[in-house]
Image (tube, rainbow, N blue to C red):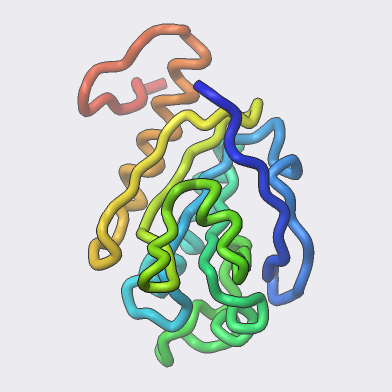
Length: 173
């Protein structure tokens, strides 16, 4: 296990332009989601699904940040567009702008010939350690349930210091 690559970026948070830094998330788990481009049907479906369930992740001390190579101005426009029109309508998760491709390169997900990223996510623990990564084709959307399961499994492993088997789900309380 190694520290996650550091990043600082301009982001859209609650409809406002701000600066975010990986260190802002120390003490919580973070899911850094890469998606190819704003205004894409699959990307909108993912951002909307993650936004709709962000409260479930926050309830287990986990934040989600989405990143693409689009500019913060593109993110701002997309975030104000209604879902019916292909937008993400003020998502409950930050949208990080990576127009220089520095973050995408640092995480190894840039497709330089296409000018955008693969569809990927990285789970970073509360100490800033990269604990999980998944990279997939740009045409396949990710599963929110599986992301939630993996975070819970990592947190459980941290708590009890035991491995969990395939298809593990959190024990009933």
